[in-house]
Structure formats: C-alpha cells, structure tokens
Image (cartoon, rainbow, N blue to C red; front, side, top):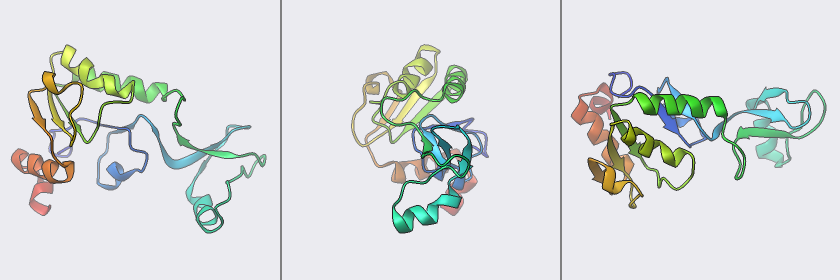
Length: 167
C-alpha cells in the first residue's frame, strides 16, 4: 500500500524490523529496533549481527569491543524516553495525514497511543483494526474487531495494490 501511494509512513512500536523486511520504506520505529546496540559507557554503536550468534549460543550479555562495557540493544525499555527525533517525525506525519489506519494496537502505551487522537483533532479519519476495543473506537469512521493478518490483505485488495494480487 505504501508503494501504491496509499501509505505515507508506517509508525510502529514493533522492534523486529519486519516492516522493512516486508518492503516498507518509511518506517518510524518509536520503540527502537534490534539492528544495533549501544555501549552504556562510551556510547559507540555496533550492528547486533556481529554479536547475535554468540548471544544465541551462549546467552551471555554482549560487551563493547572498544571499552568492554555492556551493550544495550537500541530498543526502548519500560520507563525510558522514546527517541525524540523519531517521535517528532511520527507526529509530523500524524498532523499531515488524511486517514490514519491503526492496525493491531491496543493504544494503551503513551505517547504513541496519543497519535490517533492527534490525527483526529487535525481532521483525519480513523480506521481501527484490532481484536479488542480501544479508547478511540467511538471516534473512528471504521472499527474492525478482527485479526490484522486477515483484514489488512483485504484492505490492500480493496485499494487495488499489487500486494493483494500476490497475497
């Protein structure tokens, strides 16, 4: 849907990089990602792939090749601040959107959960796809309490996107 021009950005709380693997180009990872880790002492950043095999085999905490201290994956842990630049970009896209599709989110984790309300305040229409109700169900034009794995291909097909033809 992004390639067809229906989606301008994917704003995600996922940290697994699956949106990029699926072909999305503009992915805003508000909870960070697992592709890199940062040293908690010297703040150097390293690709996690060089530590992945040892971690999986031994289960040990990766250490910084430069100073020997612990490497922390570049993900946001409970209580940490979200990456400010990513969040600003997510808010910019939210303010500019005509329609926001929220897929598979309970909308219970602040501040990402505030984005649909911000979109609605700016006049955007909301489409919500989630198994359980959310706090903005009553503000959305379309609410589908269903599995995103079933609904999103149907939405893509309705938009006439190439993904739906292969899907």
